[in-house]
Image (cartoon, rainbow, N blue to C red; front, side):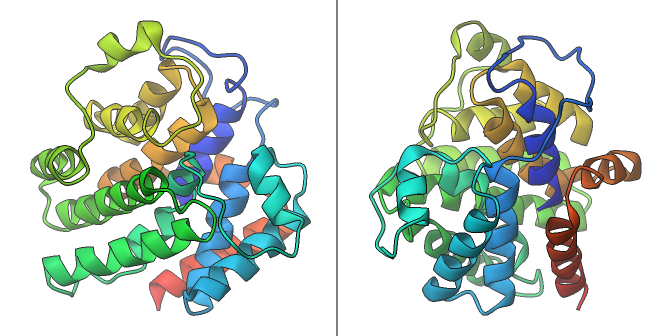
Amino acid sequence: MLGAIIGDIVGSVYEWNNIKTKDFPLFTERGFFTDDTVMTIAVGEALMNGGSSDDFIVSMKKYGRLYPNAGYGGRFVGWLFSDDRKPYNSWGNGSAMRVSPCGWAVPLSKSFDEGMEHVERLAEKSSVITHNHPEGIKGAKAVAGAIYLMRLGKAKFQVDEHKEFVRRNAEDKYGYDLSRTLDEIRPAYSFNESCQETVPEAITAFLESTDFEDAIRNAISLGGDSDTLAAITGSVAEAAYGVPEEIASRALSYLDAPLRAAYDRWQAHLAE
């Protein structure tokens, strides 16, 4: 969750003012949390409440209505402020930017196959309440799976080896093209709200990184939907590298009291 929050806040400054460099201040006074943070926290609360489809719907509507101006997409706004509980077949990247808690909700004590299947089920549940298009589901599952893989890699001190597992999982299981480098993607990459053209780029930004901060800088340097791209990259990078205390503390200072309390509950839940 924290990696997504950091990526969102750092990227908020550049979403409509793309930059194509890694040389920028990580935090500024202009930074703020957006719908990426709000919905990520909503997913975490839904999981703490049991993780049923109803839990996800209730939590997202609750937090979305508490923060009505966080920058949601038009169709999500229509769903959020209506009594409708049905999905609207979205393939947008919202399913992937909010999914990170699902990658942390399954203990590493399970067998690999059982753990991965559980993570993917939770990711799909979190997606289909709104983003029930196959591409929306795929994006959420790929990101949550990458987080789970990197949690395993960090536990075994094999981060680089597990990066290759992430690559193969994204390419072989989900059909994403990760053949281009960041330098090849960057020049022509522009704003795109689809999972299809956000998730592969976000994973590539992680794969080419050397540490958590470098992963965030990689993502921002591509341009595009900067806050969401960096939230996804940050989600996976947190699982691989952890988050430096100084960066974590600075990012959490941007949250208001309700969101910080929800974040703290999630951290306590993971520690149980």
